[in-house]
Length: 449
Image 1 (cartoon, one colour):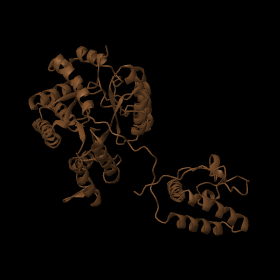
Image 2 (cartoon, helix red, strand yellow):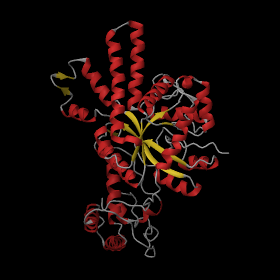
Image 3 (cartoon, one colour):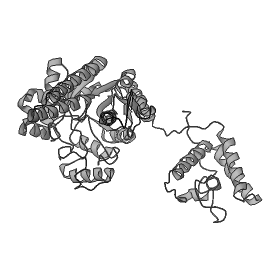
Image 4 (cartoon, one colour):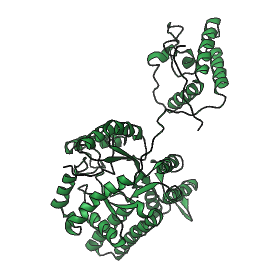
């Protein structure tokens, strides 16, 4: 008989350099284990959703769309801090080490697991993700509590990993209490108590806004303090009658992939795997565990000291409850791109200007240009060319290498005139029909954004 479980916190290769497996491989494993559903929660993006969606169709496993968002309630303060040239009140960056500490703390991001309960939740997460990249970007795309509260419809919130808003405060409490016990500095004890109170206050804020759609997330990643945080989160859940879910925070399929995961994190940070400054999870526990494997971890270590076996099994069962909350809905998976207002005329103007500037204003080139423009405009590709030109121009302006042209696009004079490619198709005798033939059916799908 299957031992049912639903992974609600999983990273695929779309969590760039922090995940190994493809969505399809994960879904295939779920089908083999007869699990009903699975979530993908990439770091700060929703890029794996199309692959997860199509894999769900192939393997008959329910897809749960979500994201592990970067969370920072100091976002607005940081923006004001930067706008003021690094000055807060009467203090400047150079005045006091407290400013350095303050600015550092304001950039520290927590992690929050967010799942879509229905189509409204999917739209809410789209809004949050877009705002995170457009408004909250500071090294990472970040969201904050007020933005979450404004876009809460249809969302399920898990309290997060060990770097979640609440777990982080509990860990800081533990760290400072250890220091206090070593050196007896009373201020550290007071600071430790403040962190504990802040964690509880954050819990109450989330619970008040999201109600029964807010869950305490329990994890067993095998790192320092995880067992103590596990127990404290369980205690908080019991006292407040909040449901718990067990998650794996999976980044790879099997334990043996841990070395590859560590290597990718080293590449991401520009370090070697044996560098003492490498930030990584120093444990091989974040693989795609079965419920039985979670059970073994729970029993072998001290997670069970203040959490009964029944409580543990209930946290596993609650993953099924969360999956049942998610209502199936269809995704519009047709490709779309923004349209440029008056794109045909803009495209014509740019090509003609380039033709003269490059000294190619002859009958042969004009005839070829007119032929290409007529076909491109007739098939609604004008915006596509202007957007592609914008991307290549931006890449060159930032020093990124742009290739001379690949495949059939080398036969397009319009691409050459827009500097999308650097091959003159007439000089080299390349055919435009191979790129965009008259017999090609349909038009480019577009949407105003």
